[in-house]
Structure formats: C-alpha cells, structure tokens
Image (cartoon, rainbow, N blue to C red):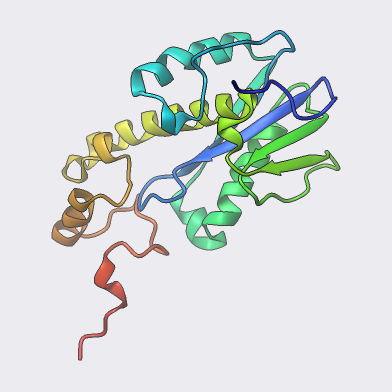
Length: 199
C-alpha cells in the first residue's frame, strides 16, 4: 500500500519524470500536491500500470489534487545541458508552477538540486512508495505519451505512437534507414555502432 506522506508538512508535493532513456522527444516531469484524505487503490508507479489504468487515473488525479503541473524539456535543451540536468529542470519547473508552492518536496530517484529553500528528500523507487510521486509519474507519462502521439503524425515511419521514442529495435532500424529528425536527441547514441570507427 502506497503512503500518502513522507513529511509532517501539509503541502508536500511529489515529483517524477518520464522519457529519460528515450532517443527522441522531450523529457517530461510532473509535480502533484495531494489532499490529506486522498486514497486510491489502483494508483502506483506508472510503469506498473496499463495504459487503460493510466488514462483512467489521470482525470482522477487532476480533479482531486490541491495542485498539479507538468513540464516538457525538449531535445535541444537536453543536448545542451544533458539528460540528468534536463530531468531535474523539468521537475523543478513543474514544482514552481504549483499554486500554492509546496512546503516539502519528495523526488523519485536519487538526484535533485535545491529549489527556493524548500526542503526535499530523494527516494529511490519513490513512485512505488508514495502516492504523490506515483501521481506525478502517471501525469508525466500520459502528457509525454500524448506529445509523442502528436509528433508521430509528422514522422510516422519511426512509430513513436507505439515506442514513444524509446530505443526499440524498430526505432533504431528506422533511424538507420531514414536518419535522425529534429525531434531526436543528437547527444544520445542513436545507433549502437556510432562508437565504432571505420578503419
């Protein structure tokens, strides 16, 4: 059973990101402050949920949250500042959009940077331990997936509506065949043989 809170603060937000390991598209984060009476039996780490359950939970989270926000950080920024910094920036930007601002932040994973003097705690596998992080993981994933669906229409040969930009065999084959698009992260190893030298 996931816990509602880590701290004693009333306004505690959870934050998480989606799309860190993708070759194309943004890294997307969300931040959520849940009310103290929030309960949900289905809510869990978005990776453990089916698409049907994520889509079912999204409006429930949004209707019940005290506040929620999401942020996309796009490929050009990822290439400039690297994926870890982009992930943290996406989480921080989402938190700063919350109204009211949280008094405490719980973060999925083990890396974060101080924000506005708000105390925080990083929690490995936090999305399967705390409801607000799980809620943030669902929002980050559903908003990112919707964006990948949209850009799929522009470049259907990469099948982003299915693979969401992750390095599947099919996605890599399409990169080999058609090259990289403006949505691909140029700082990532798009093809495994990129490191080999032609001798």
